Length: 66
Image 1 (cartoon, rainbow, N blue to C red):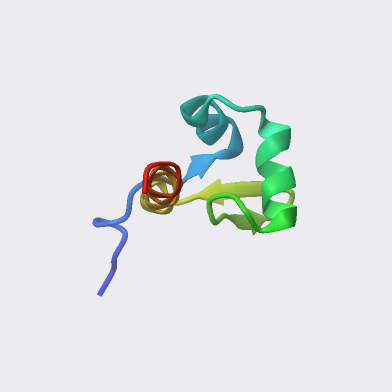
Image 2: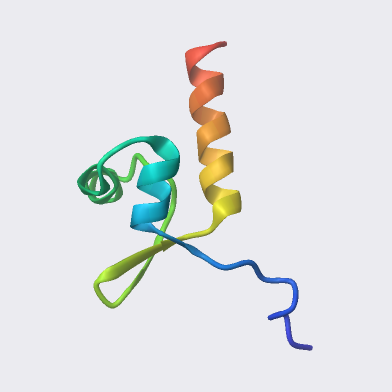
């Protein structure tokens, strides 16, 4: 069964940095430190699943507002 119909486009580092309001370099630093939203490296490029970004965002809010 092909799942391409149910898959959503993956976000680029530029899109996620705009969404979070942070520099792209910060995303790469977070990836190196394993503290940011999960990403997959495709060649030299990071790709993010929007669901993972939103889950990470929600976890950050929960830590700030226990």
